[in-house]
Length: 500
Ligand code: NAP
Image 1 (tube, rainbow, N blue to C red):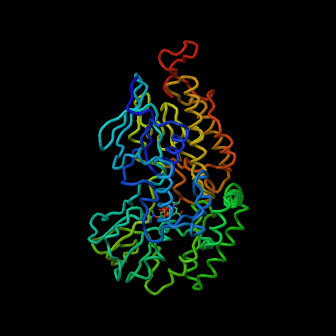
Image 2: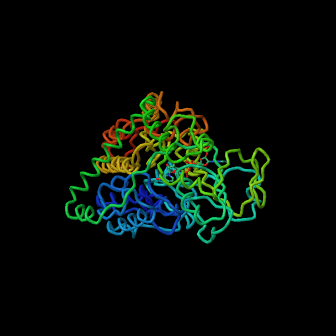
Image 3: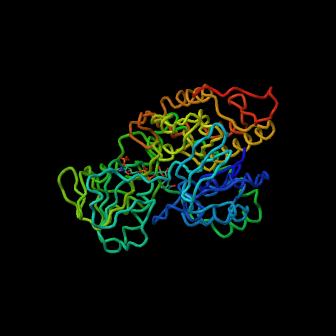
């Protein structure tokens, strides 16, 4: 069998880059990274809205093998994270593997040749293995509000910020009050003429512990790398404890008290406070952190609207109470397609079915990484690997370790393909369902992007990340169908499984 490349990686964000670097370090050179954008960085390249900042400390929100002693803040802003990813890619010599401007439009497993055929905006290529590093938060969700397309002014999503638009002095609507919107609001409020914020559900907001990292601290990290490693370990374990309130919502009452006090301290007006008070358990949606959001909302040029949006007209947003809110521009802080990623439609497995058809609204993967019926496909940050309490870069590295061990096994046993057994995947999913029972993600009394259209959690890893790491250290061949290369010893051969 011939293929254009042994491995194709899709996406050049943390997942794709991390995999590329690990492959290179393992002496595997026959791979390309297909990236639809013009640079590495993934979500940190795409999200350039004002105020974009990571809500996980930088010492942990970075690769374990590429510490950056020069982080300027404890919680980095987007430009610094993007720069970190570019520098890391260059330093590890993977830029030559990048194929920028290559949007993947289809991928199908060819059973006879046992290889993937990948359609891109620049033509077709074939590969033995496909590793998706597309992440869960890459497809902006544009709300289905009647009349949105008729709006006469600028309207754009936070992940597609239009920097050509000068918002100074304008009447600007922000729709949504999630992690992105609460960072945008304090940044644009001083510039705009009027800011009308449309809130559907108030988020829980905790105080922010962000601060600059002093030149002295940075010198220490540069000279004594173990000091930075110790800091990273400390942050990791401190954050790991934070999973407890998610798993046992009663413990979460402590966090709710802190957030309520934060709201009381920052917002004096009881009516406004009532509007900003969540009525569901903390953690059911992502817990946000900000010291600037509530103060910004109380500025004279800001209005908080809590009535639902009925329609959009060329110059206004109309709410359910019939009020017409005239605006010149609309910022959509309305989140992403998560369980319904377009990617699910265009990847077809052994029997020709797409991932979306196999999943029927509830994405599933063995250990969030491999899918029955889809040989040699690895999903980084796949179903049930997102987190509410710590760094997803940690999860990505666990998955990369698993992929590397799988590739090693394939090499040692001369395997052409591996595919998880349907029963192994079902056992894993049953375990996820058991562990998530009673957790805040499924029993917290809110609607969130953690839950799919069937109301199931197909997003969050319901447990501690060290347990995940322990399990992902080794690829377990017994959980897989193993397909030897043609010509391999007959004893090693296996039957093709029935369709999963
Ligand atoms: P999000 O958390 O999904 O928030 C979307 C917001 O839009 C919600 O307030 C939602 O209201 C509202 N919304 C959606 N459709 C609407 C409609 N038709 N009408 C009115 N309101 C509507 O999205 P996000 O803020 O972009 O964040 C997504 C995720 O990205 C975060 O949870 C986080 O994991 C990540 N992120 C992280 C950071 C960070 O590190 N600081 C920053 C940005 C994003 P409901 O709540 O009522 O649905």
